Amino acid sequence: MNAINRNHETSRRPQCLTRLFPLALAVLMVSATPAVADYWFLGVGNEGYMDDVEGLFGALTQADNWQGGHVHSWLHEDRSGPQILNDMFWLTWYPAASDLAVFYYSGHGTQEFDWGLDETDWNDECIGMPGAMCTDDEIAAELDWLPSTVPLVAIFDTCYAGGMTGGLDDLNTLPNAFIMMSCREGETSDGGWPYSEFTGHLIDGITRSGDEYRADQWWRGGNGDGVVTLDEWFAYADRYTFGQSPRFCDTNGLGTLTIATPEPATVCLLGAGALSILLRRRRR
Image 1 (cartoon, helix red, strand yellow):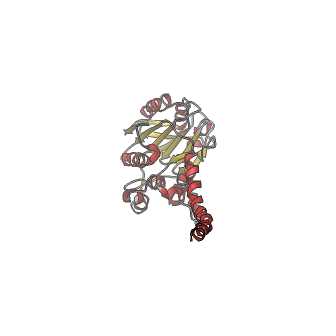
Image 2 (tube, rainbow, N blue to C red):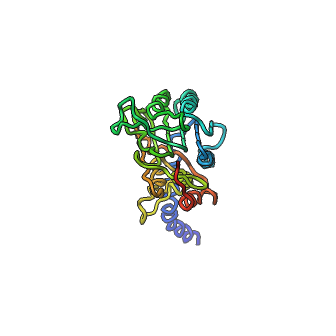
Image 3 (cartoon, rainbow, N blue to C red):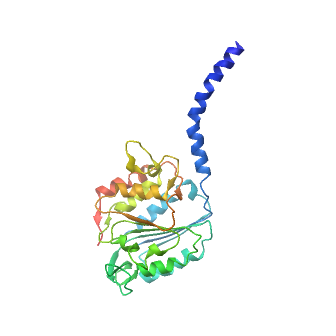
């Protein structure tokens, strides 16, 4: 009887190992992901778009890797261009090697004549408050003070955002940056409720939705390994954003960097993108 049991268990062992192998592989892949020491988040929401800032930061801080005392944040509302540049001093001064810096802006965006003559369309893209803006050249120059050993994620949910990387002195010159922009250089960017069109899908992408893989839906962009990378995050938001064409720029191969190891999403966060589609509004 004992011999029969041993043979029976031996015959079952390969099947059990086969079933456990994908789980073990996923655990190894997550544990092998380079750890970020500290996260630094600077968020600016102008002219009624502070909900975007709080929603995105709230989604990030629900992820496992954004827990604890190693998350530093500075959230501002209705900041002029010069004030935004001053705020960036905090973001570029304190992070050290192995940290991650995130700059997020949602609000008014415009264009003005390119006095630096570095743009092919003769226009600089600007953010801030009406009458007090800062240009993409000035933003790039300020963020360039960040040590090159610190990865930077810069996100712009604003009209004409795609032009932030369109010139010789723009954010595409930064040495270690992943820039996500809500629309093309010549497009406007929609708002919405509870979040703007693009930001709502970024919030959804922080959940496991951004990492989801389905063989019959290759455009999802995820691989199901339990982490959301920058590439997966943008791919998810890009796929579900309608009425505008998001753009990204990766200056140093940061696409495989993990942005979130997500907890299961709350009902509120899962519905953010869907509600943004139904209740979208045009930015002024």
